[in-house]
Length: 226
Image (tube, rainbow, N blue to C red; front, side):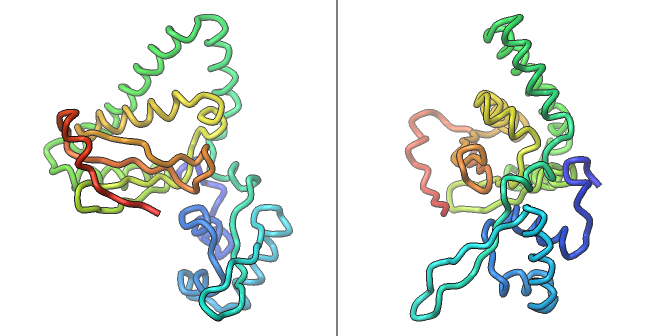
């Protein structure tokens, strides 16, 4: 299992955490349908997770004439379960490089890091159609511990990443997100736009992928995401 969430096993508790990370707030019924266990079992596991400070419950607005429901979501304390264990070291090293070398040198190095990361994936998607390249890349990311999937629209494909392996670094330095965007564009040989980020409070990062085109074509993109 990937080091990014090796602390999570396939127990009901681990599965609940991964479901909430991927889907955002969920109710008892949704968790029961996803896991195929009883409401009692779900509630028991949620009680343990709440006691551990990993999950919190809130009242959701009522749907129609029904009563308000209860939904559950991960707390900030759960983020470490998905983060790289060397995240603190990476942030410290990055800050030291900025002090010693300055932003221009560090950004140049960051571009090279992005190119190196792209090389790890690029040969595995070479020769495939764009749609298939995105699918394969999503699986490769998932295998490495970055939970991901795709949504296919009329004009584009959206690649979603549900956990950030370097959240603290990206929160402090937004150029990390830009590196990820450029890296994905290089791997896919396509235009990639970052529309949602975890560090901005969304429960996933979303990258809109479309065939490389001229600037005049960019206004034609019509894809919607909640």
